[in-house]
Image (cartoon, rainbow over the protein chains, first blue to last red):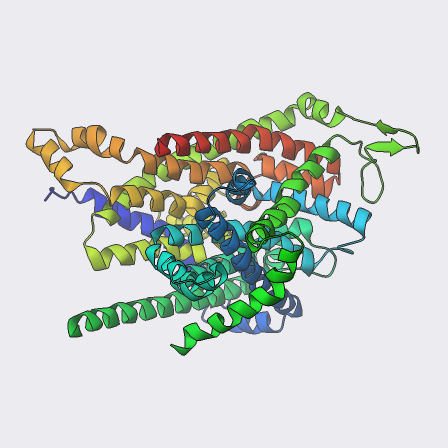
Length: 274
Length: 316
């Protein structure tokens, strides 16, 4: 064992303070009586009340949730197809093209993705008359496109990790490829699909730049409303909103951990009885 | 197993209703499965760049949409009306060149800072015993799942002149007058390091956790001081993680918009902000397109080539 210096744990603690202090301060000041978000004026939950009476925020939250749910679902389907094709189909003509197009969105600056999609939608409207105007549909298409790249990465790594002999056995027993996919591959990679869906959902819910480019009148997502409020200056109801989001994420991660730990314990129990 | 049965029953039906009729048209199910993601990405990822390239060559116009058509078709021949004025404009005005240079510089400094903070953290996590290691790793990833915009907003509250940090420093008597931190380059570095730190730590952790302890012990047994061991053994072995982490911070940071907008000042001209301004404030779509194309050629393409070369080197 190497000798441990106190330097490492200290810098690690400092790093975590750096990561969490701003989040903690958001939560603390959401219960602040005063309108100044940085000066403590007593405990109050009035900003939560203000939040739930704000039709603009509630409407934007509803738009964002719908967009994220639809975009994540379509992205999981398309991303899984892309990953499966790349990992299992061997050589085909558009292989290099698909590989490039699946990885490029991961490094593409958001401003470029947003601008290019907007210009495409405008050109398509001029030529085909679709999409007529911009709004939720165009945001969903844009989010699906960048999220499917992330889903493809997650699913690809799962496909590499899984035991291919199971698929081969099913094939040898005469199952058609479609059946092998639905009966064998899909159940095995399903954790990656869940992870990919959650990732796509979060990315969509979080996106400001791409949505700002491709949206039209009438469709404002939650980040767009938050951004315009934050640019105006201090707004304590945003702190309340942040606290709610943090609580939901914390609960979700806690639940996922609980399920994982329980699954692991059950696996151990099964091993013991065998 | 009733759960696995259900899709099994539907799969042949799915085949009969979707793929089989197309097979009669000469499209096999295999081709079809390939075509779905390929066509989606062609239409919504690749073709948009051609549209951007096209519009970057057209003249701005007060119209809806605000650019002139690229060519005219008089029934007999197509007259192309290419206009490189937008690119000439980018070269003429030092603002754009400065913005590109400043963006790359800012991204580089931030990535280097993130590496300095992230490396010891990744090392400590990788060397921790099991239950603690998972917990620490989870703590690194957790902020990523909460809204990025709200975390940047939180830093505004920390850095402003009557913000948390200044209030604390004044209350403890360390300083008398508030420090100016918001709307500075420092705030932009801080914001980038803060939001991208998990992307630095995760690849570093992945290489450090695989590091063979016996190599470090051998180095120590042979009389190397910890510092020498670090520079001759640990660091070279973790280079793939260092490069991956650095790139994951550096590349997206160049095009960043939200962080310079909310934490930087009017002088923080990063290229993402310039593009946003050309598009939303000046409504000059052709110049915005030219900015995007230059950014693509200068930043994204070299990175993709680098990554391809790296992947090929690894495959060999």
